[in-house]
Image 1 (cartoon, rainbow, N blue to C red):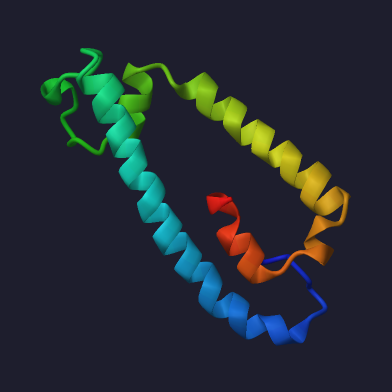
Image 2: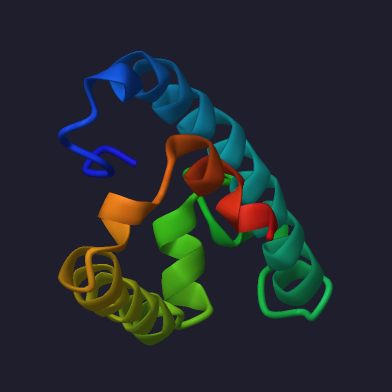
Length: 108
């Protein structure tokens, strides 16, 4: 969203409001889903027990280590970085989008 249409000065106000709005709301959405997935597959599946983590139930690095998720997370980061560089920046998609479309893209 930040690099979309860098020459369109009219979009600065929309970006200033919608980028933080998106980060907060989508961040909460993904955090809730992450907790649900960890609970369903980790705790109910018997892979994680409530006492496994001394720093609390939201010890994300401890959970990732216990479930050995590091390679999966690394693969997702690399995949998204390559897609961003090749498709969004390399193919010029950032010139054709608008901030509202980008904000609603996760729901499509």
